[in-house]
Structures are given as C-alpha cells and as structure tokens.
Image (cartoon, rainbow, N blue to C red):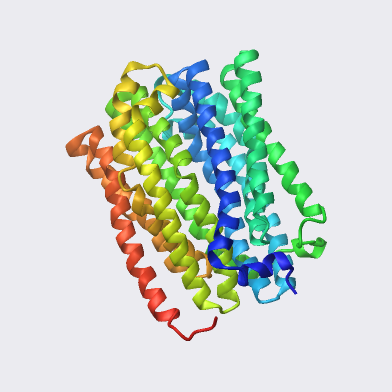
Length: 451
C-alpha cells in the first residue's frame, strides 16, 4: 500500500491539494529564481554587463545537461505517481533506481564531451568578442558541478511524486541561499570575478545534492531502494525515456533558442543586446515562479488520480490549476507592464541597456495571462503518461512557433522582430493546446466516469 502522504492525492479536495502542492513548489522556484536573479545583479554590478552576457552564453550548455536530470526525474516520477496510485510499490522502487543510474551515466558522459570541445562550443552559443574569455572561465568550472545539479533535479521531482512538497521546496532553497552567500564572499569580498561566480554556483549544486541524498537515505522517504533496483530495466527505461523526452526536448529547444538569440542579438547590437536578453531571460525565470509552481503542483495530483481512475478529480484538477495559474499570470503581467524601467535599473547602470530593455521586456511578457493554459495542458498529457501529445504540445510554443518567428521577423523589423516573436508564439501555442486539452476532457472525462 502507498503511504498516507501519496494516498492523500486521491482523497483531499482538489483546491486544497493544489495549494498544498503548489505553494512549496512556488516558494522553491521563487528562491531558485531569486538566486539566478540576484546572482545576475551581483555579477552586473560587481563585474560588469559583459559578465552578464558571458553567463547567458554558458546557460544553454549547462542547462541542457542539467535538464537530463529533470527529464529523467519527471519521466520517472510520472511512473512513480501512477505506480503509487495503483499500489505497485515494486515498480516505483525499480523506477527510482533506474532514474539514478541513467542520470549518472548520461550526465558524466556529456560533461566529458563538453570539456573536450570548450573552445568550439562557446563561440557557437554566442560567446564572441569580449564575451569569450569570461564565458570560458565560467563554463569550465560550472560544468564540473552539473552532474550533481542533474541528480538534484531528478531527486526533487521524485520527492514531489511521494507527496512531500515541503522537502522538495527545501531542496531548491538550499543551493540558492548557498550561492548568494558565496557570491558575496568570492566576488565582493575576495574579488575573484568570474572565477568566484563560477565556484559559488558549483558549490551550491553540491549543497543541494547533499540534502537530496540525506532525504532518500533517511526515514522521510517511502522509496527505500536496494542494489538490484539500480540494474537497468528495458521497459522502465523505455517509459522514462518516452515521458522524459518531453522535458528534455523542451530544454533542448531552450538551449537552441539561447544559442540563436545570442547570435542574432550579437549581430544586431553587439554585447549590449546579448546582455539585454540575459536580463529579460532572468525575469522570465523569476516572474513566472507562481505559474510554474502551480504547474509543478498539478503534476502529481493529475498523475495519481489518473492512475487511480478518478477521472472527474483529474478534470477538476485541470480546471482549478488553469484558474489559479491564469490569475497569477495576470498579476505578473501587470507588474512587468508598470515597473519595467525600475526592474532594469536594478541590474546595470549601462545607459543603452537601461533605455532599450523595458520595451523589449513588455513585448516578451505581453501574453503572460494566457500562457498558463499552454503549460497546464502540456503538463496534463505528461502526467498521465501520454508522451506523444505531451511532446508535441510542449514543443509547440518554443520550437514549432518561436524558432521560425525569430528567424524570420528580425529580417524585416530588426531587434523589435526578436521581441514580438515571444507573444505571437505564446498565443499560437495556447490556442493549439487549448483545443487538444478540451478534446481530451470531452472524450475521457465524461460525467459518470470513475470518481
């Protein structure tokens, strides 16, 4: 039998459950986003705007490798949630063991390859001109810690699948606080520049890994795996891969977008334009934390109840999550529209960046109130194990729509073409996701289905 923690996902009122799951997830994402945000502020004010651009160049590579852990975590956690919902504890344990083995094998391999081709990768991702040297310093050091980050991302989703979001929240807070403290010591007090920023980030990954490791070996976790569970199982790996590929594909597209944006903006406006995108990118990570928190909180609720064949509860969780997330998205939209100038001035004193970033930021956030529909819709198909629609809907926003737009529109409208690509892609992907989600609800969750 699954424990009371996971069984609560099928019994408590949906609204209350969503708040309980989403609030810790939102807080964790908030703290993690604040970490990235304040880290950027520290770097911009203590090192310079070129350093902001350098970190932005490194992000696609480190994010992609770390995303392997997230993909394996979310793919496996969907299996674990449904297994716990169906009282199949043996499958849940075997899945977790396979998640750990797969994460280690893939991330270590990619780190080795990443270090071998450092001088080729950095320019390819936009690290040109004055950006190259600080980007190389940051990249080389941070890459050593990325496997630990991948394990943390994987473990965090499993903790949430067990119905213990508060522990998942703490796992996200620890590295954020550690990174900020070390940033202050290494950059401000010791004057170590990019070297200090990189080691502060890498050390924060180690702090997070230590906490996640403690959680799973302590009495807090239901998943007490043994050595045989680490042995790779073909059917489980296939299911993890098919579901995790959704997340990995999304993160791969994010990395491609960073590469395209860095190169396009460097050609249009040089280092300052890359720095503008870096600031907007940090705000996207930070400002959307409540919407992303609702999405994370929704996943285990939908997955558990779908596994338990309580389809009306699944439908209720979809509607409630969209309502909450859209409301929060509207608040984010208002904050960006009214305070864009004040936000930018926190990051830098560069006059060009201060003058040009606010309008660009407003365009990027223009469709924020409706983005929740796209996020929740894609998350639903992932939570219930429908990999193909989850993959297509996840890729629709940034892959199928945004990439073609950002390749075409700047040819006619310059930098403004880059920024208006964001809301157009958001609108098109939301309409597409809304159609498929509505069809799924009508066909699968008719009145009279299992409660």
